[in-house]
Length: 405
Image (cartoon, rainbow, N blue to C red; front, side, top):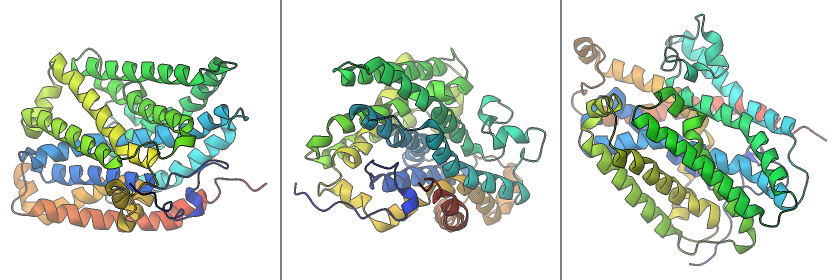
C-alpha cells in the first residue's frame, strides 16, 4: 500500500483540536457514517419498515450502533490530548478550558433545536414543569421524560456525564502512572476493566437484573467510551510507527462481518415486535454476551483505519475522504438533533390516512415506496436545517473555543 498525502485540512478552524494536538481529519466522515446510520433507522421506524426481513433487520442494527460509534469517537478524540500530555510529561489540559470547549460545542445547537422544535411542530415536554430536565441533559434518568422532547438526546445525556468524568479519570491515571515506566500497561488494563464493567451492566440489563435506564446511562455505555480511549492510548504509543496498519481494507472487511453477524442476531428476533418482546423478557446468556462482543469488534475495526492508517491509500480512506461524507460529518450534530422530528412530520404528511387508520402504530408499515421517499426527504431536509444551524448557530460559538492569548 502506497502512502499518500494527508487528508485535506479542516473545513473550518473551529474544528481544530486542542493546541499542540494532531487533527484526525477522517473522523469527520466517521461522524457522517454514524449519523447516516441513525437517520436510516428512524426512517424505517416511522414508516413501520423494521418488520422487513434482512433490510429491516440491518436498519435496526444501524440504529443501535450509530450512537455507539459516536461514543467511541468521543472517547478517542477527547481523551487523546490528555494521554499525549502525560506521555510527553507535559502539564495536563486545563479542566476549565476543556469544559468551555465542550459547552460551546453542544449547548448552542441543542438549546436552539429544543426550543424551536417545541414551538413547531410542538414536541412534548419542553414547555412543562420538567423543562429543566431537557435543557440540563437529565431526561435520561426518568422513564417519563426519556422519550419526550428530542428522544435521541438521551445520548447527549450520556455524553455530558462522560465529559464530566473524563478529567477525573485523566487525573487519576496521571497519579497512578507517576514515575512508572509501564504506564501503557496500567492504562490499558484500567480501561479494560471499565469496558468489562460496562458490558456486564448491558448483560445484566438483557437478563433483566438491572433497569434499562441504568444500561442506557454512562454505567452501561462506558464500554464504548473505554474502547475509544484505549485506541487513543494506542495511538499515542504508536505515534512513531504510523501507519501502524498496512492493509486497512481488512479492518473494514472484519467490520462488515461483525455487522452481518449482528444483523443475523436481529433477524432471529422477529422484527420490531420481536425486539420489543425480547426486551420484555430475559435474553439467553449466549445472545447477551454476543451482542457487546460483536459490537466492540465492529466499532474498533471501523475506526482503526482513521486512527492507525490515515495516510495509507486504501478503500476506507477513499470513502472517508469523499466530500459529501465529510460535509455530512461536519454538520452531523445538527442532523442528529433535527432528523427524527422531520422524519415523523414527513411520514405523517406523506400518508395521513394511514396513520388515522393505524393510530400511529409504528409496527404498521406505510404502503408502497414510502420508506425510501421519507428517507431521502428526511436526509435532505435535516441536512439543510443542520447546515443553517452550523453556519449561524454552531460556528460563531465554535470559533470562540480558544480564548485569545
